[in-house]
Amino acid sequence: MKVLLTVLRRTHTAALRAANRRSLSSSPGSGLSPLRDEPLVVGSSSELVRRIGSQVEVRTSFISEEEEGAFMRELEPGLKKKRYEYDHWDDAIHGYRETEKLQWGAACAEVLNHVRSVSFPDGSELLGPVHVLDLDKAGYIKPHVDSIKFCGCTIAGLSLLSDSVMRLVKEDAPSEWLDLLLPRRSLYILRNEARYNFTHEILKDEESVFNGQRVPRLRRISVICRNLPSLTA
Ligand code: OGA
Ligand code: MN
Image 1 (spheres, rainbow, N blue to C red):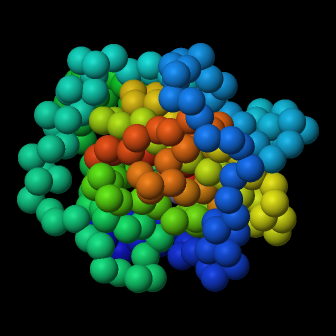
Image 2: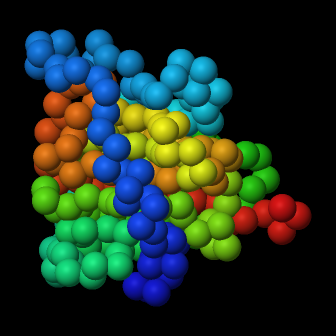
């Protein structure tokens, strides 16, 4: 199981780490404006937000508090048996534990069907097991591109327990970037160019700022559905 989850991600490179050190030009937030009044996608230029914005989607309140509770009841017993991993310097993720799950109870299965129906192109073959990633409060995801060998054109993820900021950086032009605000209980979808030509990462708590506004990062669990690479691609 560990092997599959690890190959889903391509390890970040030194160049990507350098890109990640680029600091945002936006000013510090006043902390006064509520998150719901903010845009969910900002970027290095309005042209990029328009162009790549069509290949990223953030749907707020995609699941209810009750549905989030159903996921936690199904996931927490298994996750609690694992320890958070911090020390693998070459891993794309720091401070995490993860699992895959194929069989779900009725409430979660219904949500996952909904996720799949809004996210994937018709007829695309899906990766059967759903990927569950539990990031500790101190955990974060470094810039990486998901394996093109094992995953297809679309990545869809539910965020449980915490708001977070996902950053996309163009692989061959690190000055081109998008930040996505991922509120707790939202669904994000990355498609095509946004998935293949941009790295994605989840910012650590100390750097978790969206459009100048601080976004505290608590423990965060993501539930991620992927499709398989198409045979004709
Ligand atoms: C991954 C990944 C994003 C998330 O596991 O490859 O990018 O939302 N996860 O947890
Ligand atoms: Mn990924």
